[in-house]
Image (cartoon, rainbow, N blue to C red; front, side, top):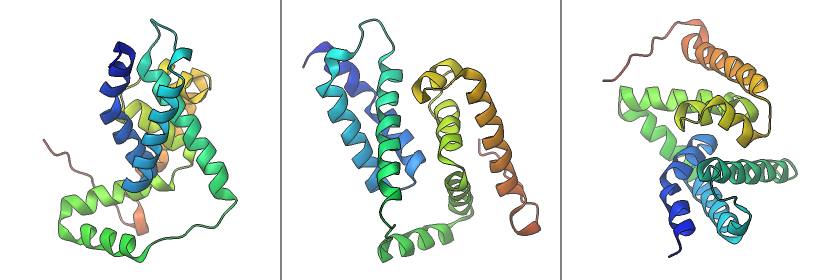
Length: 171
């Protein structure tokens, strides 16, 4: 395996984590990761040696995600019955699972641009500048999206149905 191929392979777990958080669906997340890897490996000659491989891969994934979203707007959504029952069963198993489910649901309510910004910075640990580069926006725009995303997320988690719910830290 070439050195550049090995560099791509080391980021697969991070790509999977980001895709799953972005989409909220394991199957669709795996499809997005596979498409990202296929495109990256097919276009590896475009990667500039010395530049950030991680940011380059996340840019490819973001662009693929945006393309998929545009395509999905043209056709209706379909939800498998198994997916609905699996989510419901997981939410009822324990308080922790319920809290994680609430967070995932709240994330999915965010506009795609805000969700992507929040996940790149908070989940993937990219800097503001790196995240802005991945998303193709200015750092100030990224910070604005982050602020709005955090506020909406906080509001959705704390004021659901008019009652205040506190999220406790797990150490």
